[in-house]
Picture 1 (cartoon, rainbow, N blue to C red):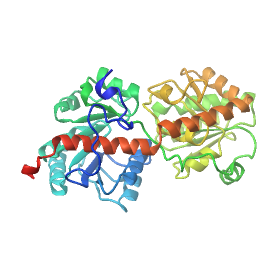
Picture 2: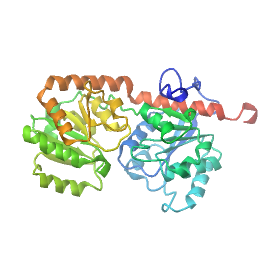
Picture 3: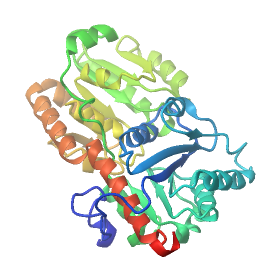
Picture 4: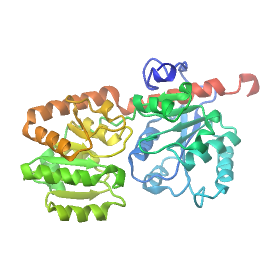
Length: 401
């Protein structure tokens, strides 16, 4: 593919075929609103916090708008930037359009970026158009894996300047699967803070703090406890691997609607002593550094940040071959991508447990891969360049200002 699909938006050369401006724009700093439903503790929301915190504040003044409640991460962000919320009372509350339009006019936004699909993607763009916002874009973290954009959201393609995918295959899907114009599709890879997610920690001390044994292999999953993450598969793998390696332990980080059922299933399998449910945590780098392996057993993904965080901490990966995971996990080099089959997962994890040298080599390669291709700096630069590029194209001429 050509045009926007030939370069990631964060690449040093250019943002697609659009020239990247140097220095400040004519109207700088730009007021940028990120619009989403809420901000619970999740991958996309954490990415947004990292992005907002690192935007160049001499060029951008970020704000957040939540259609519903702020959520824990929204409350934290509100200590640093404006966070607006309570725009709607429910799915069929058409007053949301007026509420958003008024907010956008009052705040005089230069750019609105909706995050995710669904209502926020529809109402956010429609309100931005009514309010005369120059730049309208959509950041799509999981479109098609499993979420779809839907007919109503496609109707607003004409007023949208950019659709942002998180990986090359994801960007191609936005063109071929969602039928967005190729020239409007940009790829900005997800990024992680490689200084915060690093392998340089005292593993023994961290394990002691978490109540994990000092020796024995530890495998961790970080994912919301939702059906599509398929933690039951993770538990089935834990049972099978534990039969071969009784000293192995398995850590589940995250919370959600599936928790009670998963804890019950753990008891059914007879592995309650081998599995720890830690719930939502803020010390993910420390938990990963206390682990030996990272596993993700999802049925659907786009470009999961948790995998990149684990790789940045030097862990080899065993993950489902879904979405663009194969672009992140280089088969046989930084880990293994697996069929959605318990035996395949179990065999790969056993292979790593039984070959520490291979595990170490993969962990080091994974760290190097993230530092080179998936750093937070690359992601932030991609958003900065894209917003400025579109604004420069659309801003009023000097005579009109």
